[in-house]
Image 1: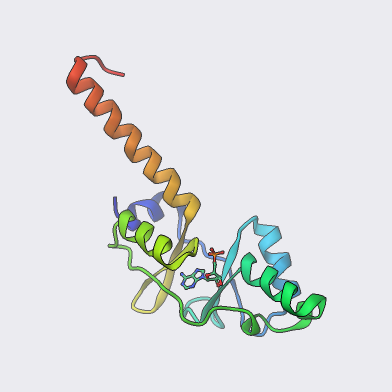
Image 2: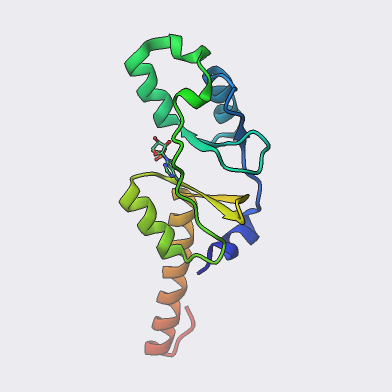
Length: 145
Ligand code: AMP
């Protein structure tokens, strides 16, 4: 399965925050959209970083509540691993496992086209395995399951 197949169903909407947004604003955005990470972008298109709930927790633990008035750029990850829509689901799985992160922005020519979360990976992997299981069962037993 390709990432473009997942985005076709899921859509291309990506929640972004500007680097100057405060951490307090970021927390509100994550809560409002019920998501774990936002892409950092000044124009909503070029990826300048990524910031997740883990960054917020780490910064809170290190510097306390004062971090809430700091800009998002102070806690975000600047070196973002991205994929193109042609990437396979397994490639993203491997990237997330090796990098120990749960979000991967999808880009074409430097332009943001979507985001894949660990939830999308797990859901699509289960769907793939279910389909494979039904096909094999049908092949072996001759019965449609
Ligand atoms: P996450 O598991 O996605 O909540 O993120 C864990 C850590 O990895 C945080 O410090 C994030 O800023 C960072 N991170 C998340 N996604 C990516 C990515 N695609 N590339 C690089 N770092 C990332």
